[in-house]
Length: 490
Length: 95
Image: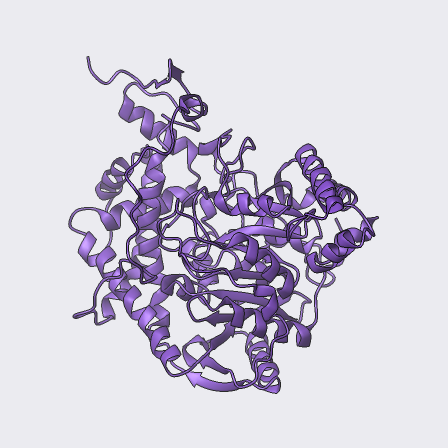
């Protein structure tokens, strides 16, 4: 039954509907795969009993003919999503053994539609990182390796567990979150499809907060169609999140295979970086040629404030994080380290509970919000953010339907290879962070491999709430590039 | 702009994170590297530009001022490190 894990969600749905196999069989196949892949460290908590119970219920629903759109499909859940009665830690020591008495809106919608939870997936601590190396559970290993090499590579981050598990066939799809590139960069590093929807499309309620004006949930899957199927269940208005948008959720899957003829695709010249690897440049040109061959029109566009997106992000995101993470004080939940006074208790708890990257960001955020520095840093960054968004608006106003860029400036790198200089790590998000700053949807699609056999991805950026166009264009790239699966070594 | 050791101590205190003296030089270096990186924002002309407050243009939603939840004190305190009779316990703050 092992090949059940290599099915796509669309194929598994068909197989379940035609009774070729049961959800319990499908779920068991994935549970065995997870057990055999512990070396990847993708899961921080396996929930086999719950998975089997959910699978049995899905099988009964399917038998009765009232299975939901995801009935019986086994998924992995990033440990940033609160799951009722199942430990949720954001991969931080400070949340210790936090067991939420509530369920995040996004995951509750997946269960409403019949999906099965296999367990909780590793991520960078509080989603702060681009390599999944800041997790308190240790780094995740990318199932991809360089040709002829045993070097272990990072899967990207922060949704590294999600990307690694989906690529290694441990789950059919996974939830993820994206604040500066945390869905799209790991998707690109593992040859999976990841979409960050428009800000407000998915509810943030019950997701551990990092930077509230940038955070969005989205799926990671193995095909564009699977990502579209998951998106439909994850999206939707939620009165519990005031930034969630009240507009109907389209049938995203219907956008797959739709003609892209006549669409205008912007190629932003500012994304052509000095010293960009020739392979990335080639992939980008190739992707543009595929879209052109499918009938789209390519236009050069300018997004003049692109280079300021990353520095502005590293003011806005830490500022919001410092405020959001103030709640971890050792009083209401999580770790407590005693002190002689309440103040000392707070300070000891937070020193012990936060890892170095989180501490650094909370401190920089505190600084840029502090008296005398607020205007120079935070207010200026928010003004630059307005300019970044305006760049995109100007571009869309000229009739551009979507923008094509590389997803990352390089392929996956080795564990421990980067990080001595934090800024070097931050540069991973150079192509993805603009999208969060402008609140736009962005999708990463596997598009090729580098000379060492590692996957590379392309990114498509869309108009607000036009995820459908991204799915249509993404499908064109997927059809041309084909799918990429890592050779099993674990 | 860059921060000195005294500022690092002040930020750590504002952020309520205990730092030890030997950690200060390293933290100072990291914070200054980040500040040097964001320094390039000073070359952007932001004259007359509105700071962003909401990335998606939307009217602020208000919910009805009604009680729609409650009676879940057990759930509220269930994850707390120390509680007594549904109260959170903290070190003594008033002598």
